[in-house]
Length: 296
Ligand SMILES: [Zn+2]
Image 1 (tube, rainbow, N blue to C red):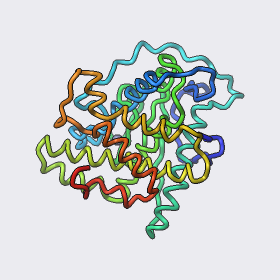
Image 2: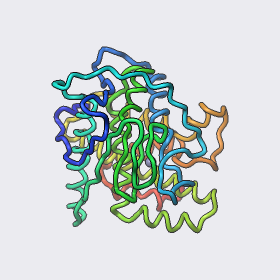
Image 3: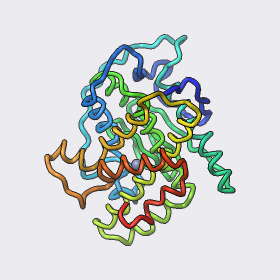
């Protein structure tokens, strides 16, 4: 992904320990990854997506899948203050690009996009949805309209598995921004109202539709990134592999060895890749109506 050509966002709040919050090496750092390692990274980074059962607490994280316990944090290598942290720059520019795309799309819809703030933090921080920590993973808090991203989380992944692909990381961010779009469009409010009256199985099914829509919205952003030649060859495939790797069935199989469809909260590998592709190929948020689809 040619993220260096993207506009950096002004809506990124850096709560990580300055000047060196550490960084996660992005592509071209000399390390190569096999497909298995990429899948592992993405599973670990996305396994903590929206948890509908905790949605009343408006917190992403946890869910039927247990989060892997992060290893004892190792001291991150110091980055000289004079060197900009490439991982933070990557986050700023990816967020900035989602702002440009959604601002244009909202304008087409006769409305105004109000970009969320993305909070980068190290260790733990307070959010409008409770305490955020590395174990929570990336999440969107509708109450304070902020996306929370733990930079140490990426560091840990980078130390353990090598450099994650940049488009897979951008997909994580674009998916969380997709939840903000749902919030601004009122979809999230409707979801909560319906989910409150539903039983656990219905709530899971609704949550899957909400998550698949966020995947589709991430794809819509990808469509416009591709249109402006900001993607590298292979990025789309990398994103689709990432979306499939975080399917509930893929994660459940890896963790339990079997699949429990009723416990799905994010959608299967096939569903997630399909809805991400839907956004990537149409570039049209209206094509992301997972709630209207008979079988999403
Ligand atoms: Zn999500």
